[in-house]
Image 1 (cartoon, rainbow, N blue to C red):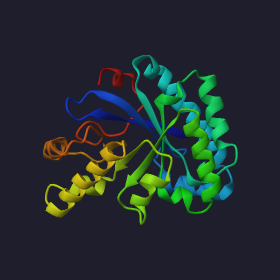
Image 2: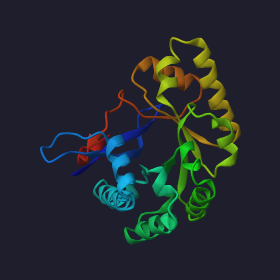
Image 3: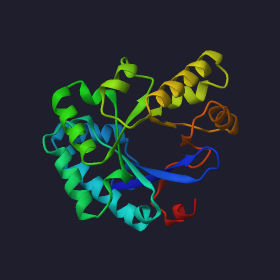
Image 4: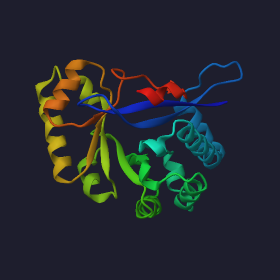
Length: 235
């Protein structure tokens, strides 16, 4: 079975909910969790990743309706396999499904990683540009751990980035990491890119990010990824 978990993205200054990110959480016949990484790898190997991606997007739009994200102007963030992003027609399928569910493109954020451009860069870029032209938001995920992250900021058609949790975890105790985080935030502002800090777990991390001008975050300080729950409406 395919479970859907959601994690809030909040405004650092006051903790107000601005978005939710969706995660695939598969379980076996006994209800035991299966590693999403292994599950997706198997789906790619067997050629089922396209169907899986469509099913999860369908569930994401259903969750968005139940949480009234559109009415509240809240964004929904989703991730796709690198194989799915490179599939010809992927963008058209996303556009069509968003129209069926009457979900505004500007409220759907599609998170991509640099590895999405490794195997089939031209096709993947074409699909991403098609999505962005249609009004969807594109965000570079896990920023800071790739070999060419800074080039990606200008080469990819993106609207923002997510600061990898490894930076958030170490910046309080490592002055050099703290300087690097500040430099990334300044660069992102200069390029007019939004930044979400991942993995915020302590009030000290939150305050340090605020002092450096970071606006958005997600992490255990606010909530673990949780099964779809209408109580998220009140965050």
